[in-house]
Image: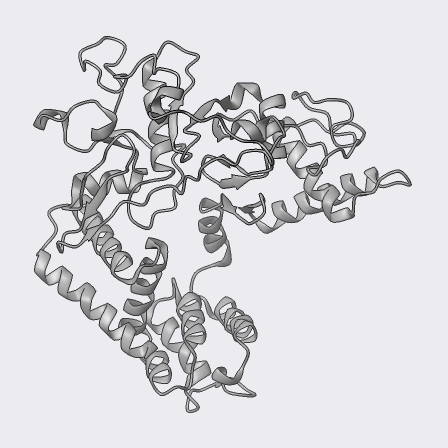
Amino acid sequence: MAALKVRLAADYVQAAGYLAGPAASPQDASARELAVVAEVAGVLTVSERSASALLSDALALVSSLPLTLAALQAGELSWQHARIMVDEAANLDRAGAAGLEGHFLDPAAPDPARGCPAGELAPGRFRAKARVWRERHHPDRTEARHATGVAERRVEFVPDRDGMAWLSARLPADTAAGIWERTTAAARALQGPGECRTLAQLRADVTATWLLTTNLPGTGTGGSGSTSSGAVMAGAGGGGGVPSPRAQVLVTVPVMALLGATEEPAMLDGYGPIPPSMARRLVADGANSFHRVLVDPRDGAPLEIGRTSYRVTKAMRQWLRLRDGKCPFPGCNNPSLDNEADHLLAWADGGTTGVANLAQPCPKHHRLKHNSTWTPAGASGESPPGWTSPAGRHYASEHPDWEPPRWPEHFVPPDPGPDPDAALPPDPFPDWHHFLPGHEVLAPAVA
């Protein structure tokens, strides 16, 4: 079944290319590839990264790794083994890829692998053996490949459960090892009879404090930043006393949770639910990064964002961030912090500068909208836009799961009377999203 899926995926990519015809430019070719990936992701209900990986693996197996595809179809290899072969054959020329799979899958090869067959090895062990062979027989010099790896260095942020997240960095091996040893030494220096944190917790707190302040008292690592003298030494609270971040974020906190009367979670833009204690700490310690969000006490939907500056465009962008929660393209997980406001119906075609005609797609899907026939539509002040694919399939918008705030136990909310809206304060600016596009302050509002 895995081999059949591979062949069908490769056939679809080939058919889409035939139907589209020759690309007019490299940008056009890139947009077409992105459109195909988005279509497959939507049909299979997977992320675009997963769809792209499937198509890439399928094309590699069909075009360059016939022995691996045959072994997969015969049931001699698992899908995981086949993916490992694709990974390790990446950046090898055709002869190198043939040598790699011949070593492990062809008993008649000049120097076949010894021991049990590849399909009978645990995937982790097969990867280790394949990587060793690849390093020994790679036609390119190690230095050149390392330079390419250095160019691809990056930091990644992955939300996790229980108000936690992973922050990982892909770095040159010597740099990563040096950072690990330095944080370990600093963490060990903080250990003592009065320190209750484990070494792993101290490493995490030391790393976070260095990144946020570049100044860790008591470890001989001074810097230009500043923090309280006992920021990491004290170990107070669940976060080890690490200073609050000063980045510009939206934190939606139910008022009763902010007051400590309930324990319902708050919402951190780009992440999701966080404990109310974390939200209260952000409000108390990071006031300049906190934007007040008023929510409807009946259903939890956002009502307005507090504005502290004259430029209304900031409030509009923050409203879009709150409405969409992320890039509105189906399946995209890109948080909305770095996304660009964009007209759904272009201004030149009669589109207005109102929230119902705006969205904040990530840069990739912003380009896809302008360079393919993927089309957004159907946005409103409360709903992100849905999208229609080049094949005519429609994908509905994904709405944030707003929930009614919880009232404190034994508290009876006041009866708003026959008209629920009468109990709410009047909106001081009810038509704030219908602005004149020619206003001098609003001219640079959107991309």
